[in-house]
Length: 507
Ligand code: XMP
Image 1 (cartoon, rainbow, N blue to C red):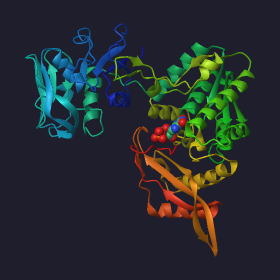
Image 2 (spheres, rainbow, N blue to C red):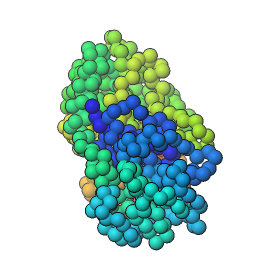
Image 3 (cartoon, protein in one colour):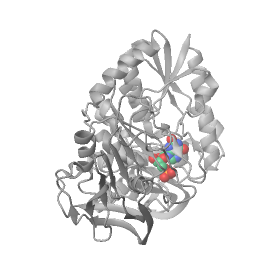
Image 4 (spheres, helix red, strand yellow):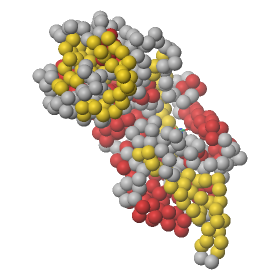
C-alpha cells in the first residue's frame, strides 16, 4: 500500500505548491477539498492544512472537523490552517494592524522542537496574511516568532499538532523544504519511497491488470504528457495500444515528420494522419481566435474518431491528463466544489472507458518518469505548445502561405535558442505573424512586407510569466537571419510584456 500525506485544501493559491514540495521529498501526497478527508484510508501518515483566502471568523470560511485528526495523526497547519487550529481550540485570530506580505525573519526559534531541526534562528520565511493569531490556549507553546508576529509557529502540548503562520512551501522561505522534511520524514515517519521507478513499476502492473487484453487508443499531440502516457502504456500492453497523431497543418516546421519518427523509434504503434487540407479549408477566412480554437478542437475530434473506428474492438481511450487538471478546486465565490477535469470532449463522443495513467503526477514528475522510461531529452524538455498551434499565432485569417512564413521564422528562432543554449532557460518561445505590413529597404528596393513578433517567456506554471531577457547578440542574429532568409518578412520585434497584464499567446 502506498503511504501518503493528505493536504486538505482550504482554497489557497499555494496548495498545489505544498503538494509539489512534499512530492519532491519523495513522499506521495494527495490534495483533497478541506471537507473530504479519507477517514477510512489506513495509508495516510500525516495531514497538512493549507492556507485560505478567508478569515477563520468569516461566515463563509471553510471549516472542518479536526477531532478525528488531531491526536490520531500528525497535523501541520499552514497560515489559515494554523489559525484555524488555534481558533477552534479557543485561541484568538484578529485582523493584523497591517497586512503582512513578503519576507520576514524568524528572530526566535525553539531549535529543540523537531519541526525546526536544522533550521537556524534568523531564517527567512515568506508571509502572506491579513489576520494574525493574537492568543493561543495554554496547551499551545509558541516555538517561533518574527519581529511583527509573536506567534509565528506553535506546537500543541502532548500532541503531534503544529501550526506555522508563514508559508514553508514558497521558494522564498529559505528553509521551507527542511521544515516540510522535518514534518513529513521525521514526524510522520515518511519512507520517501515515491520515485519515478516505483511509479513506473506499480503503474505498469496496475495497467496490465486493469486493461488485460483490451485494445486502447490514445491521441498524441507531440507534447510531453501524451508522449509519456503512450510510452508507459506501451510498456504495459505493447501492441494493444494504438496511438493517433493528427497533423492539423498548424504545427511547427517539420514537426509532424520529426515527432512521428521519434515515436516510431520509441517502438510505439502509431498512425500519423495528415489532415491539414481539411483544417485549412475550414479555417479559411476565419479571424476570430475563439472560433479558430473551436474549429480546430472539433476537427481534431472528428479526425481522431474516424481513425479510431478503423481499429476493431477498442474499449479504452487513454489520455495524458496530469494531476493539476484533476485536483478538485474550491470555488471561493460559493461553497460549491467543482471538478476541473480536462477531457476535451473526446470521451463523450466516443463512448469508451477512460484510462489516465498520469493523473496522479505533477508536470516535473511526468518528465522524471519519461526520463526513467528512456525517452530522449528533446521530447521531454519540449516547450509547451498550444493545441491550436500556429493558428493562434497568426493574427487574423490563416492561409498556407502565412503558415509557411511563420513556420520558417519560428524555426530560425527555436533553432537559435537551442544553438545558443537558451532553449532550456525559457519556459516557452515562438514567433507571431502580425497582421500589418511595414516599409523597408533591401538593396535599392523599397519593400512593403510582413512584421514578425518574437515571444519568449520565463515562468513556472504559465499562470504568470515574464518576458525572457535574451542576450542582445542573440536577438540581433535571429532578427538578421529571419529578415534575410524568410521571404515576405522585413521587420522583427520582441515582445516585452509580462503576464499579467498580457498573456503568453497573442490570441
Ligand atoms: P496564455 O496565452 O493564456 O497561455 O497566457 C497560457 C498557456 O496556455 C497555452 N495555451 C493553450 N494551450 N490550447 C492549448 O492547448 C489553447 O487554446 C491554448 N491557448 C494558450 C499557452 O501556449 C501557454 O503555455
